[in-house]
Image: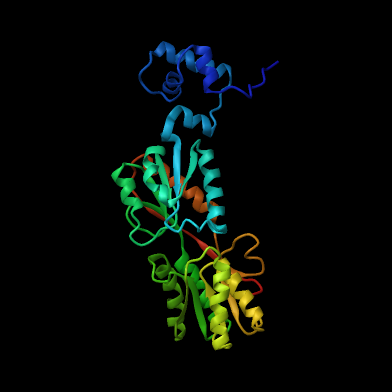
Length: 323
């Protein structure tokens, strides 16, 4: 009869049975020098006997910060909104599958990341973001989830996605199409705006931007700003291309409160295809799980000192009731 694996077998148990320190077990399990070959073999034999399977937490114990990946948001830490929460969840799963330990770092703790983590994934890019240079100066391998640039990075084809959404509204006969986003002077927003402008230029229409200030609740802020505009000119737009599903939700509520039918009088599109928020909403779907998995794959390449590259993840337009 085969012996059942011990549910409690861990690195401390191996160290106790071998009569050595956790550091010695770490050297044996990771093939590092510093112990005799006889001791290494004894430790490996014990690990096989107890059917030791290192968890992510155990990897952190035996490898220290080398097994820790710091996940860092930008300066707008309040952007722990549905998109970032979902992305963080997928990153956690992808890292655990590689035996890595994710730790979240708020923006004001970024300077402590190199002391606590052996690698980093940077979210929430912003203009003159100092984090990449900090990681390089401290020799911390990292991946950016953002636009192509120096180093490893991955991002959805958001310019193309916004282009598809805008062209869709043009093809539906819309003529007064506004783009709704926040901090529209930022490089990230300029990238998406390029898709919007391209589709309008092809159609010969004028662009109009609704620049929403950053806020804890983008849906509420979008609602307020669009409501003010509609109070002055109720028929200002017949189409809204929104930078996120949250902004789209706020706009839909504002249109409803002003008695404008969707999509009869105004068509609305979002971006992300987030659970619940995108219900019934025409939006651009990005593969958040795929972005997370690719980020971890690129992080492995960064740790192996391979040639940096950028990966663009495909998106698709999902047409629903709002257009």
